[in-house]
Image (cartoon, rainbow, N blue to C red; front, side, top):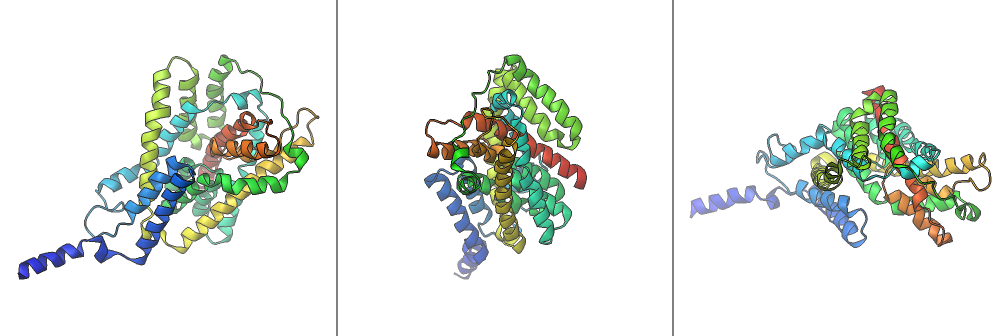
Length: 380
């Protein structure tokens, strides 16, 4: 009988009930909220479902030494997490993004790349704020990249500059990507007049297949020579696009833009979520990062919309840009372009802005990778 009681006591010590702390319960509630928003509200379910469930996995209370947790060397979760920690998942995601992205809107109207560049002010604005509230330059650089609205880029940069903040920055970046339809519309309305919202843009010109093939080659060479430190992201992005547009590597493009990016997205979401283990995540720095992340998205949206308003002062009537596509300069593809379309249709249901918004949207993808390369070059 004593042996049975002793065995039961030992068993109890290894259960989650015996090791639970309030922080685990808080994080489990947060994970459930993520899943709820993904399922009920359909806010970026491809991201929030694996992240939310990863949060649940990462906050099951464990007895020390079980070699199960994500921070325990040799555990399965720890091995999967190396793709995040060492930064080799993000380039694979960029390969897939390139394989499913059509750069025609940008090629047909190259000046839209300036809108994408303007939205990157969110990165440098967040960097300045992070320095002001006490983060060191390496940490501030990693936090700043949240403003690019690009989860893979945030992971890539943070894994090199501030790996101790990886969980908080990655979750913040992906969370705000999902919240784009909530954060951006009020700022867009605040900064524009009714007349500006009704601006109709000329239809994009047709883009020849030769242009589509040359764009990733020339674009890569120019960007890589300017920012060599962004090579892993830029190289994979443009390679993926070349696979798509060349017309002779359809199988590779389909794999990169389908099964590969899906598998890597699951692994990134799961492991990023699991890295939010309460004792590592529930810190004052995490709260600061989430607050700065929200400000960075607002600054990026403001920068993109306000830049279009200024740019329009130098454009003739008939060539003006609808400022509502300025928000799409961030890298959340195609979520922010859809927001441009959604807000525009609220004022004119026949004015279709999506095809125009995709120009600055894909420019934002390139811009965030370039910005990450610049930050890495200066701070790395």
